[in-house]
Amino acid sequence: MKTLTASFRAAMDSWGASPVNLLEIDVPLNTTQTSLIGTLRLSDAPTSIGTTQYQPLVTRWPDRIYSRVSGDLHTPDVSDVQITLNNLRDNTQAPMSRLFQVRNLEGAVMRMYRTFDGLATADRDQVFKGEVKGPIAWDESELTLNGVSGKFKNRLIGDRISKADYPSAE
Image (cartoon, rainbow, N blue to C red; front, side, top):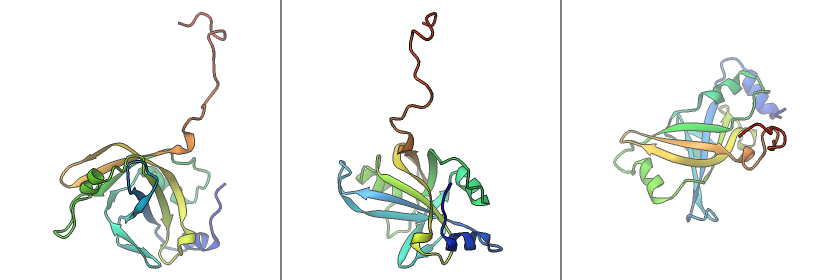
């Protein structure tokens, strides 16, 4: 069972409190993913936690993270996500797709959190950690990226069977 901080629980139980969803993507210096330039910090509204600012570029979150906010802490972990970002920027900034073209973000670590206004960084609830996986699709207005959890990578799900178990199978 997931352990939430007392501050998070108090905020979650307060009347009218709405969770804030956050996305962080580690931007690699090179294609080997060994060094980082920094971390993209995104949300669906202008958000700050302490001095850390989150850019309001997320236009669509995965539906499954919303079901976790209802207080049902026994919901299975999210294994994959699809997130849509605003690709349109003002005249002073390049579109998000430019960053994805210049830096190969496939394989970059991404994390999704939920929090509430006024909580500290340590009070965030991590709802997903995985890697950015292709295809990363974009058009003039939106960029869609996929995240896949490494939690199930290289793990056997179910039972291994052999031809001896089912001799008539082809």
